[in-house]
Length: 443
Image 1 (cartoon, rainbow, N blue to C red):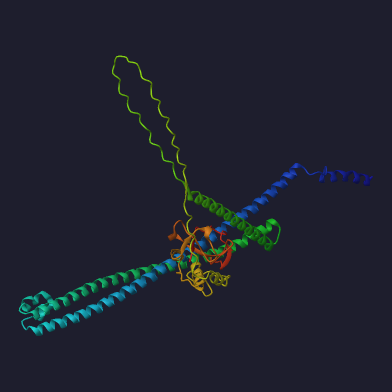
Image 2 (cartoon, rainbow, N blue to C red; image 1 turned 45 degrees about the vertical axis):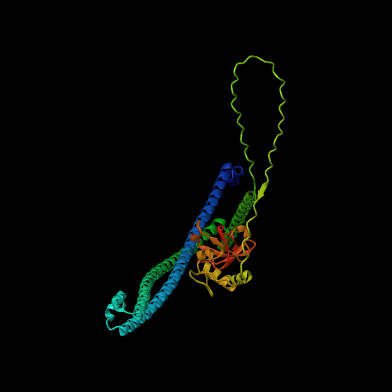
């Protein structure tokens, strides 16, 4: 009886744990909501990681821009210093010439005084016209007067030149000092921007570690595997963005080429014929009717054919000149620096900024370039993207050549070598991996 009661009591207990053995819609909804929350959490973490990456890139690009502004200020200071040195040399030459003319004039005054005791040397030194009355008496004295006047004129001209060149030298020195002060300020700003980029890189590293840990927990994988997945996703996205940018640039190039071809053939317009105005008929007076003579037949006019317009073909623009340097040597030099770090204002031998790398690369190729991207563009031959050849320079600017802030060396097949920015080493990448360059030139 006890066993029967136990058996009876056991049945309801089993039914309470799993009444029908089926998953309800409520269970499905609850599981889907949990999956959605997990996916949203993953997406949120990835979005936060992308924002941190953008902040880091903005800081690094800002540091690279500041570094190139320093290069520009330093280049201007060097130019101003050279101009000041030239002006100082010219002033020294003018001062030396003045001293020679002063000595020659003094000798002429002494000679004139010895020829005529009546001549006051002191008066002659103040103005050469003072010798006129004394030297009128003889041809020899007149000749002495002429010679003395010539000496004075030469001295006076040398004095003016010395005064002018001395003022120019003072202005050039002031300009050089101001340019040097600007270069120092730009150097300090570049240093601050580099420090800010380094601090942002530290913050990014900490935040990346934290976010990767969250991703690993959400995906139930190790941190190492989560990091590998994110790196693969980022690389795929960058490759796709580069491919899209390359396709867009190629499409734009084709459209521009078609427009040029259409503009090269322009038909000569057909001249518009001048309309003939019929004369106003003269009224016929009333007269006695007479027999009308047989009318003379009107000759048939021969139609004049309109000349066919002949298209005028404009010759295509000449291709840009080839570089006089050795592009292969420039590329080989740049490739030898792959993996070396970026540092603002650096031009080797083991660290580089963008224009420092291209300067040294083309120095190996036999061409002298300034350590400043704007000057490199100005000293080269501008070309279009369709004319690119290995060894040409790629530039990034904000709408005008004077705004250029980055330069790279084109190596062919859509690839380039450059020193990108703080935190990234010299690398060979697609020319479309970042922002499409908007200026191109051939050294």
